[in-house]
Amino acid sequence: MTPRIIAIGLTGDPVPVAAVAVVAGHDALAHRLGRRTASAAVRFGAAAAALAIARGAGISWAELGLGRNELSRGVRTGAVAGACAAGAVFAGAAWPGTRSLFLDERAAPDRDGGLAAELARITLAAVPAEELTYRSALLAGCLAHASAAHPRQVS
Image 1 (cartoon, rainbow, N blue to C red):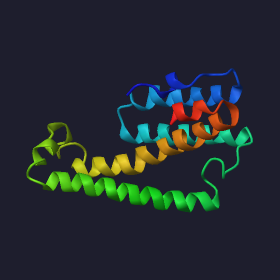
Image 2 (cartoon, rainbow, N blue to C red; image 1 turned 120 degrees about the horizontal axis):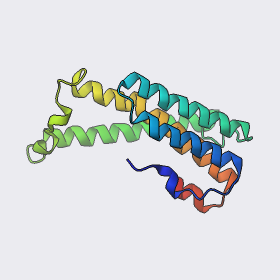
Image 3 (spheres, rainbow, N blue to C red; image 1 turned 30 degrees about the horizontal axis):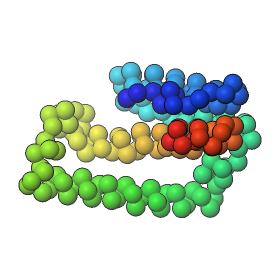
Image 4 (cartoon, rainbow, N blue to C red; image 1 turned 90 degrees about the vertical axis):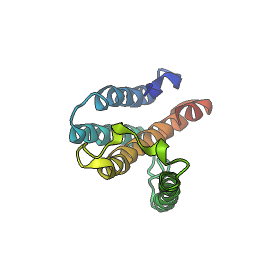
C-alpha cells in the first residue's frame, strides 16, 4: 500500500500537518505489526488521534460526518454498500465460471480461524478505523484548512 500523504499538498498549517503525521505514523506502524490485535489498536488509536486533532481545530461533529443526522444516514449507506459488495463476492465465488479466481492459498483456512475470520477482521477492525481517519478527520481537516482541491486528492 502506498502512503496516502504524498497526494496532500501541505500548506504549513499545523492542523493538516498534525493530521498527516498521525496518518503517516499509522501507515508506517500498523502494516508492520505482527499481531492483529496490536494492528487494530494502532488503527483505532490513529483514528481517535486524527478526530481529536480535527475537533481541537474547531471542526464540528457534523463537519466530520459524525453528527446525529449524518451518522445514521452514513451507517445505512455503508451497510447497503457492504451488503452489495458481499453479495458480489459471494456470487462470484459461487459461479463456476469465476470460482477459480477465489481459490487463493494465501486465504487458506489454516490462518487464525480461516477466511471468515479474516473477512470479519477486515470488516470490523480495518474498515471503520480507516473510514474515521481518512473520510472523516483528514477529509474534514483538509476542507477546513486547505484549498478545495486537497480533499479530492485525499479521498
